[in-house]
Amino acid sequence: MNVLGYLPRKPTAALLCAALIGALTLTATLAAAAGSSPTRSAIARRASKKTRPRGPSYITGLSDSHDEMFGNSQWQQLHTQIARLTVPYDVAVRPYDLEQAEAWIHDAEARHQKILLAFYHSEYTPKKMPSVATYKRDVAKFIKKFPHIREYQAWDEANRGYVPGYFQSPTAVQDAQYYQALKRDCIPCTVVGLDILDGEDIYPTIDYIAEFKREIGRLRTVMPTTWGLHDYSDVNRFQSWRTRDLVADLGGEVWLTETGGIVKFGNDFPNRNGSGLRRAAKVLQFTFGVAASNPRIKRLYIYDWTGGTASTRFDAGLMNAHYKPRPGYVVVCKQLHAAHCNVKTVNN
Image (cartoon, rainbow, N blue to C red; front, side, top):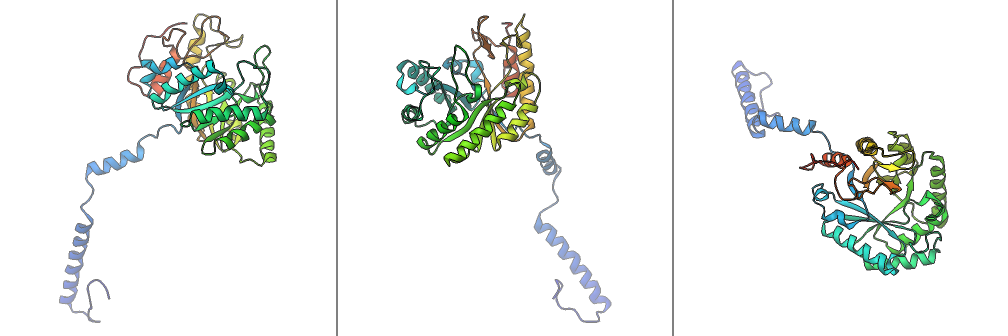
């Protein structure tokens, strides 16, 4: 049966006319039931949804160890949601280090920051790597003391190696063992696999990643799905191939746990008459583009907020030593769409 009901096999002209009128009436009724044609404003709204540009696929925060950052109005207007802190692995048993860490964590939590906590060498024995048992014991005390922190890294910039006169870093095998100990002590936590520096030559870094993964397999520990990368060497040369290749080699989701524009570091990155400040600002703009071009990069932690003085060995601060904004701050401010970015910047 069709929508017009039963019709004779040989309809008369009158019946055909009635059928046509009925069909037209039904069509109008169905159109009315479905709603009227979309208005111009409705069409515009739909078009707007289709053409509206998408935001970046990553979120941006700061990596810095000075709690003064959280009280700074220029930091507050950025409205970041994430922050990263590095502390000695034995911070929980060292009263002075613990006091500093507690102040930073308290201020970060008061500003509703999700904290990523990275461990590194002891300030008291920086050239001696801890045993797995010692690492596990001290880290477990920290986790117990700060139960709200649920994102960790086993060792900051693990592949940096020995820095003469400063500190020692773990081998890939040691770092995998620390990763396993940390993951077992904080089961509900996100433990970022590795935290590595790219380097001008990335092949030693690639070897480190491979050795770490082999040890993870030997330990029969869950392979990380989130990884940490510092891409200073790449972006500060206005290049992106190192970051791209290392992200592919790591696999999974990647957080740029330290990145940014170097104001001053050795002879390669001087700061003569403010040239380092201008270069660092351009690097930051470039870095945002690199992160946006790779959908597997999900977080970007700019290092750092607090700048140094003329005698500082490594300086990448968005502020100078007196917390006055540098040109790099303006780049970050505009990227995060803050309200008052046109501030007077300093040349030191």
